[in-house]
Length: 303
Image (cartoon, rainbow, N blue to C red; front, top):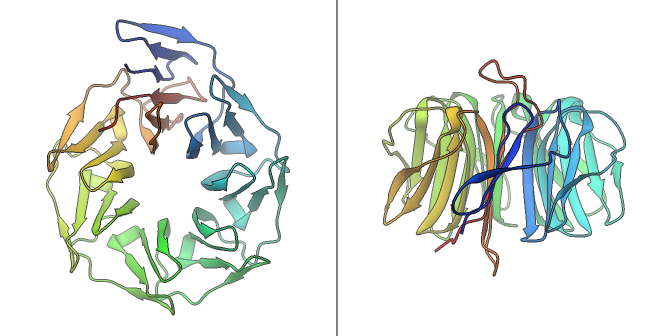
């Protein structure tokens, strides 16, 4: 069974296995930039003008924030602890009851955040900005690059990756960040790591694969810009991109999955549970579309 929500003329649609039917949209005239799922019944979306939506298991509802900053990165540690980052170095924190603004040591735009735990996490952004959360404060950490860092993924306190513009790849060894050899100079948009396997996606349909020693290019036509990726395991993952492209990693290959939209897709997050789920959000300011506040959601049997 598959369910889906997608935006077109402010429409959100649901697939019941036979047909698409309209579902009420919780908000319009916003761009959704990041999402983080805690479980099949709890998750968050953030985006432009301080928009924050929460999934309660049956519908998305709006939640007030402390300001109207544009939010680009989001990571929920659990239902009572989460972080969102955005333009001008803005940082929000969720304490289980409300979002509040937290002191930031930078005015650089922050594009991404990933928490190792409630007391340790990282954020990254423009001009190579790297921030570290020690459980009390965010602080600036020395960066080996001035590239814009679009995505950061921490495997543990002693291992992590960040990717960004100009083919930039950084690696964290528990002591410092260092530049890692990249086979191309294309702008990277997102990274996902599971076990010994890692993937990077980016402009021009870019896919890079980590083989445990180095990053290698992997051809995956059509060559639409790819914006988001999430891996459930080394044998199952999803990637999304422009013009509604969704690809699934299965049987050691990426294959295109049919979608009901040609809208640019920004991010994907999978939930592994009894109600297996895959969630995708879209870029509302693309292809001349005036339907904003778009969401594409698919609840799929994930193998």
